[in-house]
Length: 261
Image (cartoon, rainbow, N blue to C red; front, side):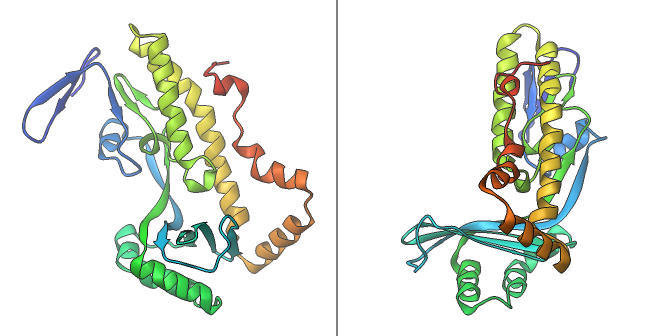
């Protein structure tokens, strides 16, 4: 429950907390967002993300990344120590989350069945023994992050997906922005939250657009698009590669300093 000045939060034990501001930061599938921001939507990105670590001695060169781009999938292998490998993969999938979770190991193994034996065995060990996270990727679309004294923060309000280049970082940036405007307006939370929303909206749009562009480029949906991407990337200069990989994730000086134009 909330009024113009306070938010009352009913806890599981029946007690009630009263506060000036409720910050909703409970992730992509936030139930609180659905209550207080009913117009917001969770857009299915139609990709499964699976990432984690596998502890074992290996023959990969530490620090040298191995990235495999293919039709409707991408696999990245990051040897981070002589006895540890980080693995990430993106797989096009239109199923619902429960069905994906129930068949997670099968999906991982069959998706790369045509790859060489070393990769197949590595992914098999990763599936059986690795520490991993799996989820259907989604993007939150919300016209506002503020409903009176309830505020959305992080993936709960503007998940850009890991393909944006600022997945976790955008949540951290949002927290810093909100803290900045509250510090700037300690006695006027309405203005602080309004400034936070104004600051965040164009940045959200930028990185959500990045994610869609990156998914189309780095996880092509046809052999023709894959060949075109490979040809373009191989022909690109170092400056071109920087423009492709780095420029889209750079914030302006004003954004870094939380200055609203």
